Length: 110
Ligand code: SF4
Ligand code: SF4
Image (cartoon, rainbow, N blue to C red):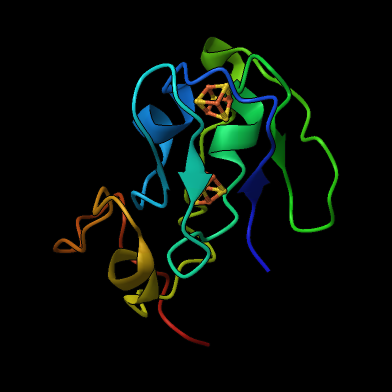
């Protein structure tokens, strides 16, 4: 299931601007759509929509959150094992693997 957009859409383009995968799209002042094959249900479109036109996969209107109040992820360096999955799946490519430094090095096992 993916997010979807109702007829309440005013075509402000905000959802298309923040969507990390390009799943939300449309022309200005026209009804926008979400491509269910590329939507990863990240909730960005729901948080930003001024019309409450976005529905999550359960049909609920996501809570609107001011852009400046969106939570940002952080890495717990004590728990990261360097598996490399996050850079592979990040839709915007903002995560990368790098050499270990004394600050990021994992504690020796045992
Ligand atoms: S953010 Fe809401 S109103 Fe604006 S284009 Fe997207 S669905 Fe339509
Ligand atoms: S939930 Fe995320 S991936 Fe899906 S359409 Fe909205 S912003 Fe794009």
